[in-house]
Image (cartoon, rainbow, N blue to C red):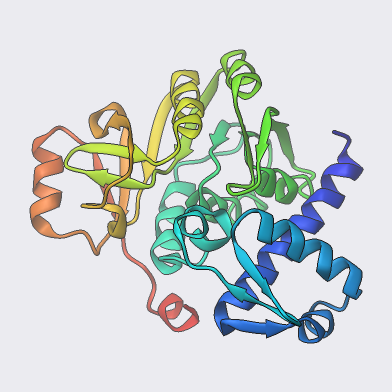
Length: 271
């Protein structure tokens, strides 16, 4: 995939993420409104809606489109970008403080690592490895960043690459620090609902000298199908100050190195 095609693909993905956000915020939108809002043709909007409908993210109705709240939508990158963003930004800021010029880091496909990217533009001499198409598209516009985009089978729901090719590519690399997230934390274990994504995350963990897990407080006490790892397998776990004291104490007693981010009041207003 050449850089021009990567940029073009990133533009389409960015527009479709914005389109889903727009429809989710309103519930039901007419085609003409989308054409005006996104300053594009009806044909382009129809192609976007066809793709998003096939992914189970939106439902087309006569003359328009509506949201389709279900398990698929809630698992998608487009949906997850809207959840707990105030907390994720605070966690990402704390994580970014662990990065210095010259580092080789890996970022997984999570929405929290997308927030970390916002802090990388001013850091020179970084090498970043990622399987996220959205993150790769953003980093491609930062000339000071050396980008290694992992290939594999593209999963549109997560806007990222997975599968055997992705895992083999990861296995050929060694990174200094991995920044990643998960769907759920139950007890002292991290979980994710997708088996292929668990495999990719395992490969990333094996490739890293230091592992940093970022999980906002809403993920603690929730469930997902596949166990990923014991929290003690991470060098640092970063969460936010919404985590209750009993859970914090249990993690510390289990030997987890815990860091707590405190969201800014200004972010609450923006959210």
